[in-house]
Length: 316
Image (cartoon, rainbow, N blue to C red; front, side, top):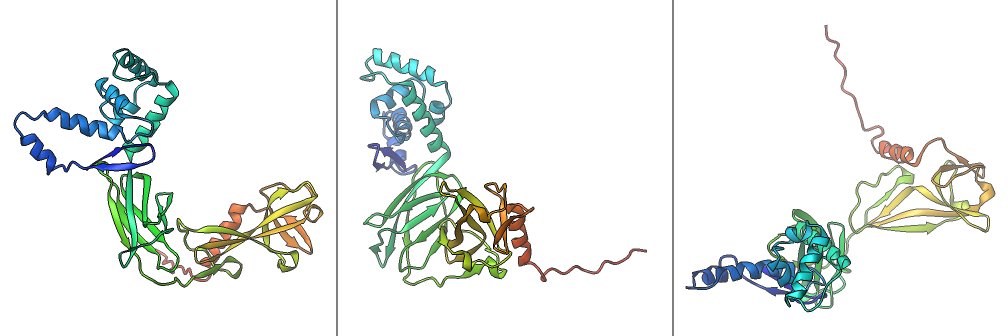
């Protein structure tokens, strides 16, 4: 299929099946086969925002017949070509160098990344406001349960779908260069029982998901146990400082991080942002360990007492 951009905000489909209509058109006597190829090429160029049909035709006539051929040349060269096209009456006006550079950037994105669309349903009823996560991209379904995501690399990708009142869905899908696949996802009713991992209790957060969210929890000094490590994050003008906890807690898809505001005089002198401080007798003492060291120790604590070494046999 070929998908053509009909405006900068909307994608419509103009389908030419590779085996179907296209094959039949090629079999028609005296049908200009080149026009199929030019139409396909220009339809691909029309995926670029801000690029309309007349400019697309001018680019095609100047040899910019693929996204790659548009993206790779010096933009000044393309500008000169289009200036000539303006003199020949192919385009109604001149363009700018900055606009051509934007075309080239978008051409690269489209050339090496795909797009997907889909619909999220339950018993054939659309689910609005479902959250879609894929390849570091995020989308939300509209009132008809539909979504669209661009800039998906051409390879297998895991897509995650979350909707209130429904079980989370994880599926591996594929994006393609020649067409935009349209997926249908059917959700099941239910609530997820949230797992809890608390690093203060010796747990380790085993894995992170694309839809995880961080939530800072304001705590008081009375809630802080001795020897608890904190990271110094900010000095306030009023003489206070902000600390955040090194140890985290994960409840379902929410990662909780403690946030503590204290007077600056409770911090050991010469404290610097990014340093780790440990509470000892109502004073935060700077640790000689970095945040990375603490994170590593938390990870190692997960395996404490679980690792055994096989006996070493002495070779004679």
